[in-house]
Amino acid sequence: MHNLKIAFFGTSNFSVFCLDEIKNLGILPSLIITSPDKPVGRKLILQPNPVKTWAIQNKINFLTPVKLDSETIYSLQSTAYDLFLVASYGKIIPKAVINLPKYQTLNIHPSLLPKYRGPSPLQAQILNGDKEVGISIMLIDEQVDHGSLVAQEKIILENILNFGELEKKLATEGAKLFVKILPDWVEGKIKTQEQNHNQATFTKKVEKMDGELDIINGDPYKNYLKFLAYSDWPGTFFFVEKKHNLSGHQNDTLPLANGRERLRVIIKNSKYTDGKFIITKILPEGKKEMNYADFLRGLK
Image 1 (cartoon, helix red, strand yellow):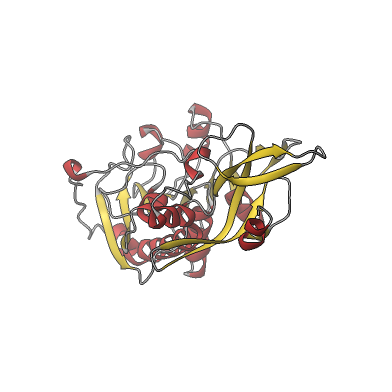
Image 2 (tube, rainbow, N blue to C red):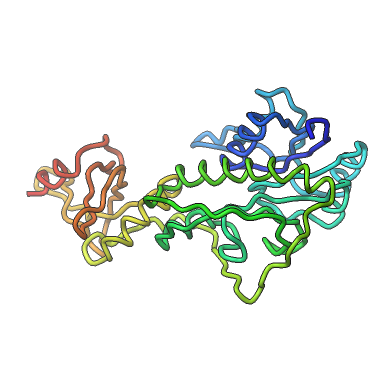
């Protein structure tokens, strides 16, 4: 199995966790296909994504096409690849690419398909408070997370994990499952199973404003699950109204549903205890991180 020529498609930290694990288990891809550098920060300096950085550190050839066009396909055709492996690539892979390798194109997906198709399965499982999660390895087709299943593994969690913890756990377990089934897959011993498309559920792209919490009237447990689900991005936050005192300085008041001029307060740490969502650390916009209790005392 270690002599197989594998091209890996991925972009995110989930992809890197997969790469780390398959490397630990003795498999290195011959080529990595990932997204182009993106402008970051106020100065919009181009920065590589984590997968490109991993490829450079591990001295593996990589491609960063804007799209998988005829030029990219020609480049992939120049080498006889045995298998393509996809893990959080973030783009639809055309049929002309899917059909290139000898042993087809497999995908590591962090849910028990057909549940949680789409761009945010990790966040969706956390938001729903799922303690039975899992990994699916499927054949890629031209629809989103629609292909036939090759293998699945259920994982029972003792506690609900935050995004980063769940991402690493499912990526690592997915990579282990891939390496485990690879010999049988190559030898044609695995029979795929079509998904029950009638039972499919779909996730949506996470937007920045999804992280806004109503800490006064919102459900405490749902607020906590949002804190866990959006811990990587966009984070969770609430707003306070700005008021000017007689000296011309601004004082923060209690959170309002609809402030006139509002200050964003980012929640840096919280817990859920005795049915209550308890905020412990915050970062008010333009200020330093502080204890929430100190912030509240400053409002009195």
